[in-house]
Structures are given as structure tokens and as C-alpha cells.
Length: 397
Ligand code: COA
Image 1 (cartoon, rainbow, N blue to C red):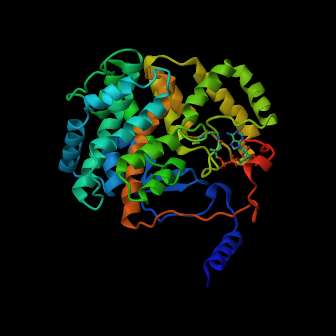
Image 2: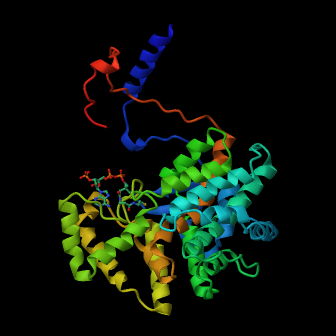
Image 3: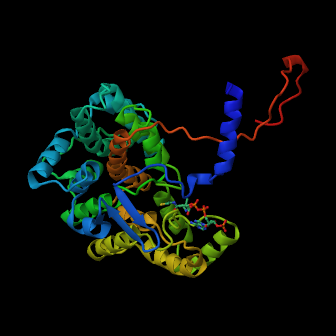
């Protein structure tokens, strides 16, 4: 068959398979990392229910489980925690690079650039060497929180502070961010938030990670591409927008008017809806409990009543379409109570989701084939070249 005929045949194949916008319902990988039952509202990591992990596990233990498939023994966990602790510091070169970022820039953009810069420091690309893989996992899990905290202080005009070896992972992050040693309850609740956000099958950023991984590039590029994808308001960026929305609503009694207006103007209600769930996201229920735990100890956030009023109103208006609160609806309220600035909610999501991205990176490499989907071409064929002087203005950009 000559080249052109083969091309035409391939295009015909694509149109026979049919276009699935957003790849809805199209499996693109076999995975044993995470399972979602969107009708029952069930989520498991490596077979363990999320509710149990969020109660019993720690973020680093869950990370180990996600990436290597089984819960670690006590000595494996100790070694992993120790390695992560030893690699928390970032080079002065990375800090100096971050000082050149505009203070007004979004912290997700700063994180994407800083994560990508790690590839400059650890450029050996030996993805079939288990030691290289282990070291890359440790570095990314260890350094991403330090980068998020560093940018926060740098943009305020301060020097970043060093990690503290006597503090566990989550407590240390809150310390580096706020310059105060956190209350143990606050640190534990933050750690539980990280567990809840660590993995969620083939969401957009994880798909992005797998596509990047499939080219056999380095894991820093894999994580950087996923950070960029997570930043969008339809994905991880929604947690920030939820708080903006609640503040705009202002009072519980205004929730119904806001909702009706959004629905009639076809505006999305942030923190609602999910491609996989037709019921309330199980993570949203746990995050709501965590928010209540924090409020009971440190005082209530008035926006919580607005959120509950909106959820109640939406149950009648959107529930019939299977649209309920997702993970981003209550997480912002938890982060706000923990004193985390609003534009850091999505970077905090990234700190956690790096565990899932790396689990998928390893899994992708285990049975790799480069992602290269097809398309259905809808453009013009067989155009005649027009010399510049004979052209009229193009219609639009
Ligand atoms: N508010 C109001 N209506 C919503 C909605 C929301 N948050 N989410 C979905 N819908 C409606 C759509 O308007 C559409 O209605 P229609 O069929 O009458 O046109 C229908 O539900 C399907 O929506 P669609 O955007 O095609 O679903 P999707 O599976 O492609 O998108 C999300 C999933 C998460 C992107 C979508 O629910 C959304 O944009 N949510 C808000 C942003 C958000 O919270 N993102 C975080 C996800 S964890």
C-alpha cells in the first residue's frame, strides 16, 4: 500500500472508532494503583479504602503504598522517612532562581518551573535503574513542599527557612510555610488531607504525567507537566475558586440565588461535579469532617455555613444530574483554617498528588508504549499556494 492510501485508511479507522471528547469512558491504561466506584462513592488505593487510610496511615506511608504497591514494614517506612527527611533541602541555585520570579506570579507557575529545574540538577536519565527511580521519588516527594514554602516566603521579600529535622513531613511543611511550629492536631489534619489528595486514577494531570512518562523523559519533566495540568480551574485549581465563590455568596441565605443564577447562565458551580462520581465524592465527606474537627478546636469559619447552604440547595437542583460536591469543595475551608494562603491551595494539592503521579510514572514504564492518539481531520484539503502580494487579510487570528 502506498503512503497516502495508508494515511486515508488510518483516518477512516479513526472516524469509525468515533470521537470521544474528553476521552470519556475510553480506557488508555491498565492500572493497579487506584479504583473508583463512582456510583457507590467508593475509592481505594492499592485495594485499601480511602477512609481507612485517611484515619490510620500517614502521607509518607501512603506514598510508599502507592508507589511500591504494598504497605511498608516498620523498618522500610523508617528508612523511607529518613531518606525523605535528608533530601528536603533545595539548592541555593533553585532558591536564587525563585527570587527572580515575579512576586505577583501564581505559586503554581513557580512550582512548575522549580519542579522542572530539578532535571537540570539530576540530569542522569537512567529510568531502568531502580536506584535512580528510588532517588528520584525521594527527591520529588522531599523537595516539592520545600519549594512551595520557599516561594511563599520569597514573594513576601523574605529568605526561605530551612526544614527542621525534628519535625515530621507535614508539620515541617507547615513550619516552613508559616514560620511557626504547628499545633499537632493541625499537622495531623494536614497530613490526612495529603492522603486524601494523593491519587485518583486517570484524572487530567495523571494522564498528562503518563503521556510525558511514555516518551521516556526524566521524572522531573513528568511531574512538571502534571503540575501545569493540575493548575487549571476545571481540575486542581477549583479549590481556590471555591473559596472565592463562597466569599462572593457571602451569606447562607444568598446561596440559592447564586445557584439559580449560575444554573440559568450555564456557569459551573465550583467544587461540584466529577467525571467519575454520580454521588458525593467520598473525599469531600472526609474533608468536611476534618473541617469540623478544626472548627471545634480553633473556631468556626463563617464560610462553612455558606458552603453547607450551597450544598443543600444544589442537592435539589443538581443532584438529579449526579452532580455533588467533589474533593475541592471542602478542602479550601480546611486549608484556610490552617492559615494557608488561598493561592497555595492548588500547590498543596500538588505536594500530595506527586505521589500518585510517580506511581503512574513507574507503572507506565513497566508496560510502556508512547501515547500517540489519532485525530479526525476537519480542515481544508488541497489548497493552492497564493503569493504574498495577491493575498487579502486573513479572517482572524
Ligand atoms: N455546576 C453546574 N453544572 C455542572 C457542573 C457544575 N460544577 N459540572 C457539570 N455540570 C453539568 C454541565 O453543565 C453539563 O450539563 P448539560 O449536560 O446540561 O450541558 C453536565 O453537567 C456535564 O458536564 P461536563 O462539564 O460535560 O462534565 P465533565 O465530566 O466533562 O466535567 C468537571 C467534569 C469536574 C470538569 C465539571 O463537573 C466541572 O467543571 N466542575 C467544576 C470545576 C471543579 O470543581 N473541578 C474540580 C474537579 S475535581
